[in-house]
Image (spheres, rainbow, N blue to C red):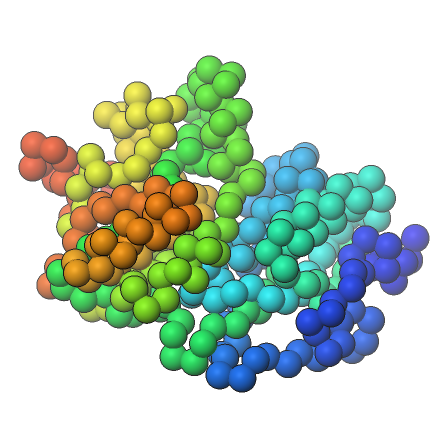
Amino acid sequence: MSEFDLIRRYFTRATPSAVLGVGDDAALLRIGNGMELAVSTDMLVSGTHFLPDADPFLLGHKTLAVNMSDMAAMGAQPRWATLALSLPQADEAWLQQFSAGFFALAKQHGVELIGGDTTRGPLNLCVTIMGEVPLGAALRRAGAQAGDDIWVSGTLGNAALSLAQTQGKVQLPAGDFSACAVALHQPIPRVALGLALCGVAHSAIDVSDGLLADLGHILECSNAGAEIQFDALPVSPMLRPYLATPLGRHCVLAGGDDYELCFTAPVFRRAEVEEISVELGLPLARIGAIVAGSGCTVSAADGSIIHIGESGYDHFA
């Protein structure tokens, strides 16, 4: 099977919203009047972001999901994507499952694959995603203000807990491990939440490298500090028994791979945020506040300060 047969068979779909999609030297796009184009790229590398024997359907889902999460964090509607694949060989069974997982999520959110590249080499997956957001309305990391509430969606730490079992650091009951593995392998991009937060939130980011690391980016860009209440962090019943341990604290504060949204909003917007939570059927937890200064303090229920010695994943640390 040639490179072009591979592309035609597994990665060519109709692209009605694009002027020109897969099959030429470049795609052609036309964005709506009064809109800005949001663009983000994420690469997933075998052995770093996923195991070489990862389920290809789930890997297809995650490859697109982590990129869509960036669109959600900007309050952008994802529209188009390109996909670059480095493959050790053209394994048709693997390609069929990978593309099925990728396009299942793409169809759910109306994302069209408009181009990309394939080459032989170590397994690497790279998506560039594009979305639309009204002029001047994008959510940014900069913008958090002293007095803002800090919120986070969903629950934190399940993906890291699943990885900890895979690494032999913990032994979970089979049912708990299965539930945590869903968070790791099939993250849900919070697109609807990002769209709803435009005009409500002052700043936002998706939690990919760990809560403290990603909230730290908001603080750095906003020249602000934060105070977090550890007991307010949303965790699942599977993780709760481990919260008093270094492993549990690592999972919820620095584990990463959650792909939830962390955002800040003024106090007078609390009722609106709570209404958004109800409308979307998505739990939103108020975990602390933005303060003047710099850095982030995490406090236990008794007022003591929690230190874990790390903030999140860094490829080059």
